[in-house]
Length: 159
Image (cartoon, rainbow, N blue to C red; front, side, top):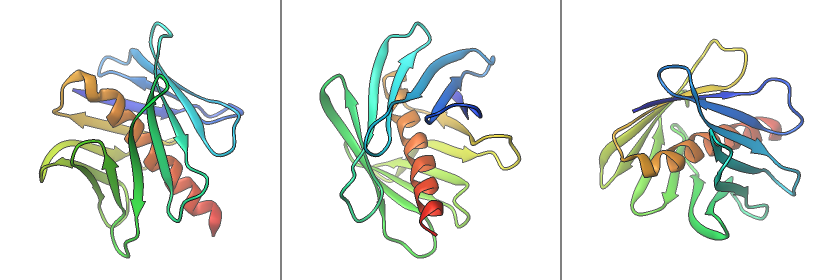
């Protein structure tokens, strides 16, 4: 399955739409006011599927993934010199980027289950997700791509 995430250009908070291969909106991610980033993930009908919350006190960018009030996972950037790496604490997933941080492979038990690519020439941050996982993990892959985008944004703002 292929999904395309596009950040909305004109919005007060971080907001994204997620499209399928036929350019239909399948998910909407809306930022909320809070300490750190907080984003709500909804399906096309407006039903809340999950939430992403940034951990404020951490050495490296860390985001928690919630379904309702229950924390189901966490993505944390690892310290690395050459390739961006993340740990997705949700059952043996790891995320590793290429040297430029434009392509990320999501691995489970050392097998690639999804690839996240950042589009280079776009008006706003745009990512494509090619996943081999079942539909129930699409929200997790979307949250992972959003977390990578927010963590890269945090890194660039610290310079």
